[in-house]
Figure 1 (tube, helix red, strand yellow):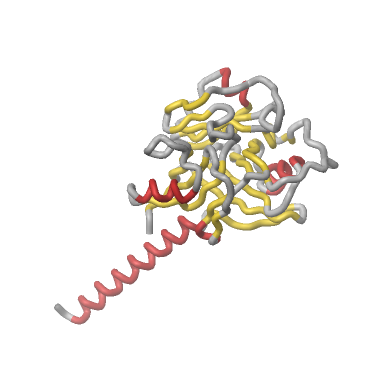
Figure 2: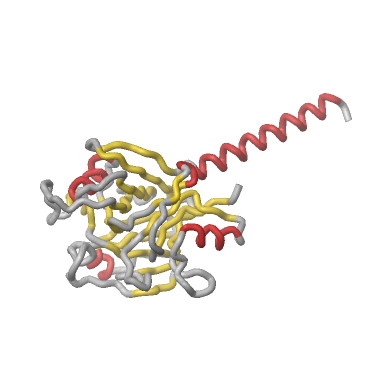
Amino acid sequence: MRATDLGSRAAAVVLALMLWVATSTAALAQCRDMTHDSVDYTVCEVTADQDLRLFLTAPDGSAFGTFQRIEDSLAAEGKTLAFAMNAGMYHPDRRPVGLYLENGVQNSRLITSSGPGNFGLLPNGVFCIRPNGFAVVESRTYGARQHNCRDATQSGPMLVIDGALHPRFKPDSDSRYIRNGVGVSQDGTRAVFAISGSRVTFHEFARLFRDGLGLRNALYFDGNVSRLYAPGLKRSDLGFPMGPVAGLVVAAP
């Protein structure tokens, strides 16, 4: 074989390796840190052409509970998590409080009545993963018609509703927690997950989505137990076992 052929092949291998590394790095770099109104947040963005999934029940029938158990399960597919976040409120046994739909199978029903706690602070809503995009839908609106969701998780309260903050949020509230949630772009092609770096009010957190991220609809997932797994940021939050989890799945390096 001529030296020029060897050189061409070597260059092609190097180029392929560089592309593979760049692709793998991009897959893991879905999350970034940002500051809004002097508060630090971490935000993770997903587009409609990516493999975002909800996770609740492991192959053995128990709740996944931890990011590592999800990673172990995905390894059998040759996949990994680019990032993951708890995605909805749950009972002590980790059953979802409201609607939960995974891969077309409904695990628990939609709840549209008011009630105690943040979940019952109406309006609450549903985060929907469609085959071609995403939506955050107020719960009663969701119940009134079909929304073609492959996966869906109900939580509450809504943070932003058609560009307006939830009417019960007070700028001078003294209720502060580490909080996390998700917002969706107007055309449904992007979902943006966020978690606060310090304790924030509902009003502050909702303004992040509306004013800092420019999203007209956003849903609260939880507070105090909020956790993020982001390998690209070398972050894996610890804590008690979780209920529903949203995670972006990519090919393992």
